[in-house]
Length: 129
Image (cartoon, rainbow, N blue to C red; front, top):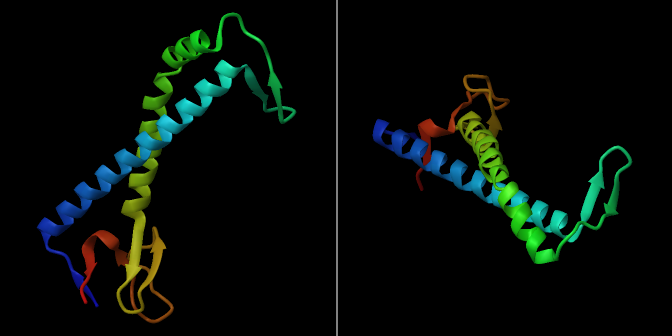
């Protein structure tokens, strides 16, 4: 059964959603940076026009290139973290639920459900056994 959240629970829900979004953004940023640095250090480039992966040799050893590309590519972590974190938070805030039939959706708060109920933001209700 869905019940209304108290204002304190709504604030806690929002804090948890923000923390989850930041964590999600950081994980995606680190993965993008890691894969990018390793591929560039190994000499692999992707040509998006033709869709081919090409190998190119750069000067120096793999470990030196890894260090250089790691330092140069580090801003990628922060940029991707910010973009993906905002996207995840927007998605969490847009999540809606119809308390009458338990149908979940996004971005349609106040809209009528097929069951005759109305969608409400997920931040305003919680499930109680």
